[in-house]
Image 1: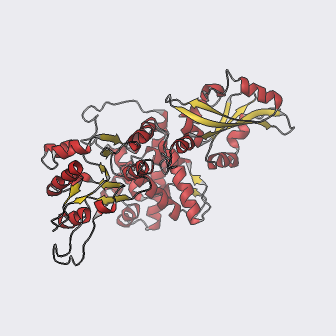
Image 2: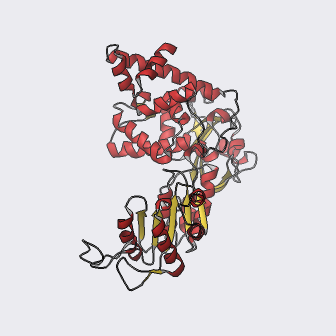
Image 3: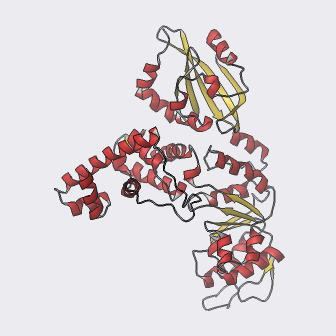
Length: 466
């Protein structure tokens, strides 16, 4: 008797096992239609399980490995597994190199009743083979969304040159990680990678940190100091938050970029350096130039090459991938037995804005992994400010920011099924949280509001609405 889809849908242990494997997995029934897939398969192909359920597998796995499912039919007949390299084209029309492992599934009577297909993304391995330094362009960076794939494709190109590079993107998008990966992928990989935050030090100290000083240059300068540029000799210096660099130091940096030499603080002898400069900022440098806060000539000197990292809200499908990735890391570090996120918790996180991008997502997962005492992370294990933001969105308090290209052009739209489901689940979760807080505080609204991380008027308004 063929394996029924009901068995797969109702088998919680199977779902947990599939989602715990860091490879793309899909199960097909005897008619080669999709029965179940894990989250990594969704991330690789771009198709959700809801969209793919019951659809012929060769429509979802668009590969050069087979024609109209012929390979699948052969394995159903022969019962022999197949391991072979090939490619797939995901729903974003991105071509990915894949190692396929296709094996038959048997029912209780030992009859072949379907297939299990495992997809391993070979992109990073192929790049490592092409790269003489052995650096992996994705290294610590995860993402299958089209915008992140565009960024990954630029990395080998940017690594082949010594030209100045400007990395832009919101806070927490991973600009420092991209800079380090580019360095590790370049011919300078064996040389130093030196990072300095231009907004972390006052101007007087920053100049000394960047360019060094000679003994006696100022009070307390009892010895010579080489400075970051000299420490990065033959390597790469990464100037993060370049938009915060004081105007006086912008002039000196421009000289270094043009002449490859500078005077240390208090020195009379020029120092020659051979470094590649990579700068990063979350600000709009063009706007800074317009305001007179950033030199136009330095902007064009730094902006020879440019790469932009998208915010997490524009990385379709990557939030779920990153949630699972960070959870595995923290579960391993803490030695806990957390299996994953509850459905309500996952829907709440997928609907959250993540203004702090990947850094904020990682911190949220770390918080939840430390707080959760059981095997499943639920909404009560998330930071309280997440609920406050969700409440603001529901009450219409959220407004588009000045940087939002759609600002002033908001149009009402009918809610999707997913949005409706999230809203209903959130209302129920919020009601349970309020009741629980009121019980714990004996009905004291002020203490309950503090426990929930809300203002007293916010709690009063929500109580009235309920």
